[in-house]
Amino acid sequence: MEGTAVVGTVEAIETSVSALAALAGHRAGDPASTSADPLRDQADACLDGMAEVGRMEARLAALKVHFTAGYASAAEAMAKPAESPQERTAQEMAVRAEVACALTVSEATAAALLAESTALTTVLQRTLAGLQAGTLSWQHARVMCDETSGLEPAAAAALEGHFLDPDAPGAARGCPAGELVPSRFRAKARRWRERHHPVSIEERHRRSALDRRLECVPDRDGMAWLASYLPADAAEGIWSRATEAARALQGPDEARTLTQLRADVAADWLLRGVAEGTPSPTAQVLITVPVLSLLGAGEEPAVLDGYGPVPASVARRLVGEGAESFMRVLTDPRSGAPLEIGRASYRIPKAMRQWLRLRDGRCPFPGCNNHSLDNEGDHLLAWSDGGGTGISNLGQPCRKHHRLKHTTRWEPVEATRDEPPGWISPSGRYYRSEYQDWEPPDWPHELESFDPPLPVDPFPDWASFTAA
Image (cartoon, rainbow, N blue to C red; front, side, top):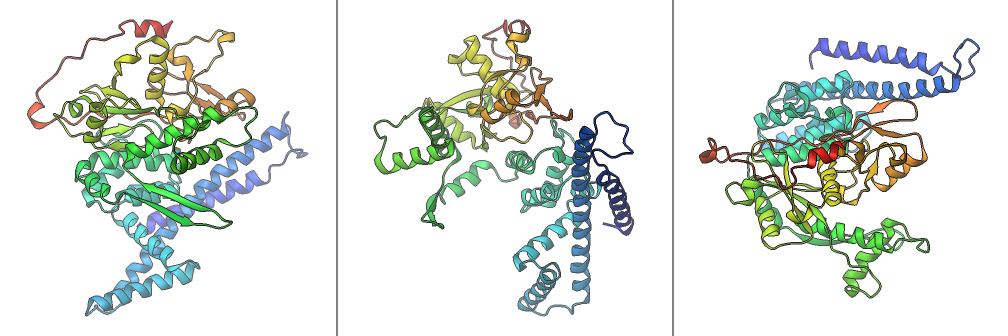
């Protein structure tokens, strides 16, 4: 970051401080106020203040990055040339210890800040510019640093450009990166990284599968954590099956929460097998497969719902074995958009539910990460109020946000065939929902001039039906 950029960031912070001072002075019942609804004014001022504080925190983080990188650069320039690797390590330790003491943090935290500051001031300058502008949070910047670590500079720049440069080829759509909660941004960045990584996902998966393991970590109060490192298709299937079994046990006489039931069901299965009285439903997981990968003509990753990219070999195995738990979704070999949903699913109600799951990917409430197969269909405009059953009037919120819609003034609006609904809050603010970024598939070199015809549409009246 150059000196002029630092000065600009400081000036922006000063502007934020002035704005916050004005917002903080706004009080309901202020004698000087002529508003008809002073409480609403106070609520709006507090929301605006929170947003402004968030932008100021991002700008302060940009200044911390600048000063951290500047100190590291100055310390390196002042140090005498290292005559051995051990001396070089000692110099790095001294810098790390100084930063840790100045910020009153651990040396591990200081080391992470130094690495992130170096990356942001050298390779990830678009991300740093977003921090300076207040459009990206420090959490978003750290996600970008994490997901580009280990990549060559050109690959890191491509990932950053995809999400932060609107003029980049195939730039990300949906919500801007700064409007996604950090966990959702991480999921999208990881998915793009997996798809475009210079080392094939097949090779990386084979190496990582050798490390599969089960771990038990003691915790306080007579408790412990049991964790398993597994191939993603197995892990997602186990999670889905345990969730369905837990839901089947819920009822008016069941005091346990869904989270507690899921843990109890999994423990019963592992300790006693499928016990009598414990539901054992089949898991149901969507797996989106590029048609050329399914045919063995390409190795483009498939996408496991709720997880992200998996090797094409995993998809071929699941489909070849006839795994009933996994619902196959083929994609258009030219645009990457959904093409068909398993041939057993063309009865109108079921096909519509599956199309919703493909369109939304998860609960459409901003920031929610609840898996699509664990959500509930819902009319945006109620049937009793004249709402139809077309795709543009349907959403699939999770149970929590379905309840939020019906018990508060939160309202989902403006869904389309291809985009989930956004939401209007009780304060009248509109919050966009994230939607899927379908990418055109990678064509094998020998097929680049091949333009295959689309298969016959098994439901040609779909558009008329949804319009009605």
